Structure formats: C-alpha cells, structure tokens
Amino acid sequence: MLGLIRAEFRKIFTTNLWWALLIPVALLGFGAGWLGTAVVAIIDMVEQFNRSVPLGLLSVSMSTNFSTIFAALFGAMAYAGEHRNKSITTTYLTGNPRGAVLCAKLVAYGAVGFVYGLTNVLSASLGGLLGAGQDFRNFGDPVDWISVGAAGVLAMVLWTLLGVGFGALVANAVLAIIVPLVYKFVVEFILSLGLMDSHAAGIGPYLPGAAGNGIVSNLAVPLFVAAVAGPDEPNIPRAAFEFLHLFFGGDYGHPWWASLLTFAVYTALFITGGWLISRRRDIA
Image (cartoon, rainbow, N blue to C red):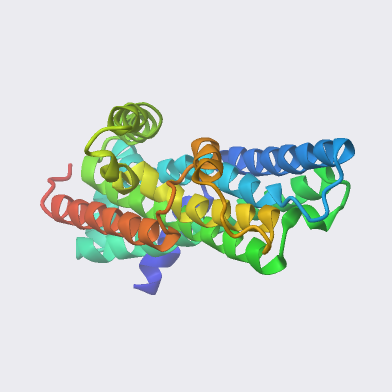
C-alpha cells in the first residue's frame, strides 16, 4: 500500500497540473484577503468603529468557495488523466486490487488538497495583512480566524476527494473538467434561484455546491456578525445574515457542521460509485 501511495505522489509531482491549479488558488486567496481588509480600512476612515470589523473572515470564506473548484478538478484528473494517457492499464496491473489503487489516490490527492487549503488560507492572511496595513484587528478573534481557516482547509480536502470519486466514475478528462464547472456555476445557480421562495426552499442548503460552500460560510458569517454587533446587541436582524450569505455563500440558520456532514455524504457517495464502476471497467 505504501508503494502505491508513493507512486501516486510521483505521478502528481512529475506533472504540471498540481501547481498550475494551485496558482489561481493562491491568487484568489490573496486577492480576496487584500480586498476585504482594504474595504475595512476605507470604511474605518469614514466612520471610526469602537470594535473590529473582521472582514478577513468573510474573505477566507469567499476565496475558499471559489477555489474549491480547482481542488475538485485536480482530484477528478486523478483517474480521468490516466484514462486519457492510457497509463491506467499499468496502474491497475501493478496495483491490483483496484480498490487499493483508489485508496492510494485518495490519500495522495487528499494530502495535496490539504496543501491547496493551507495555501488558500495563508494567501488570504498575507493579502489581508497588506490590505489592512498590517492591522491584525481586521482578522477578528484569533480563535475565530483559526476556526474559519481550518474549515476552509477541510472543505478543500473534501472537494478534492469528491473530485477523485467523480473522476473514477466518469473516466473521461473532458467530462471531468466540464461537468463540475457547469454544475457548480450554472446548474446549481439556476436550481437555487428556482427554489427561492418556493415550498421546496429548504432543499437549497442540501445541494452539493451549497453544502460545500456552507462548511466555511455558515461558520464565517455568524462569527462576523457577532463580532461587529458585539455582546450588547443580541437581537441581530435576519436581514443582516441573509445579505451576507447572498454574497459569501451559505444559508441563514443552517449550521456549518450540517453542511459538513451533508457534503461528506456526497463525497462518500461519489467515492463509492467510482469504486463500483472502476472495478468493473474494462481497460485496454
């Protein structure tokens, strides 16, 4: 098993895909961090607040929810790329049984997904520091920042693993790229609009993309609102939450851990489906 895992790492690091997809993750993280805290600095010039405005928390949420698609694409190419290059035949012949190959890919790609998540959080932190003029108050309470950052890393790992399962399911490089992009940014967007103000609106938080986004957003938004409102304003209007969720993802009143469990189920289903299909698929 260790040999299979080492082989997967060699496959990853001898190609350009892993760092090519890491670059937009770093840029999105840095840009979102810089923009978020720069906005706070501008607001603070106009009106002095007696407490911090930790837009850095929302910046991590935004950058994570945009960057996870790159982690999913990276994971999807775990199988789809090998089918395209015809190297899957050698992989299966030397790594029998096929379930062991899947496990090795999950470990190796999950580890790189962790690097993606960490890069996103560190880039957002660096961008936030520069945007705020090295003012740490815009990151909020350190515990809140670490919690949101950890949730972002976890979300990135899960999206990577879901991508591995999807790649095993379709075994087609074109589909592995197009389907996740179209679903996340087109299909689910249309579904979400259709569910708004309908009797089935409660389904929205359980859609795959919404659940994946909610891992971070449903944690970051309440922490941000609580930090801005302070302990003296316990009755925060629902509209404040809904406005922020509209831009930064997530759903009002839906806990982050429920989004985590929902998305973990989707990840497990794709991995299981990929395993069942790949173990019966003919190879040339």
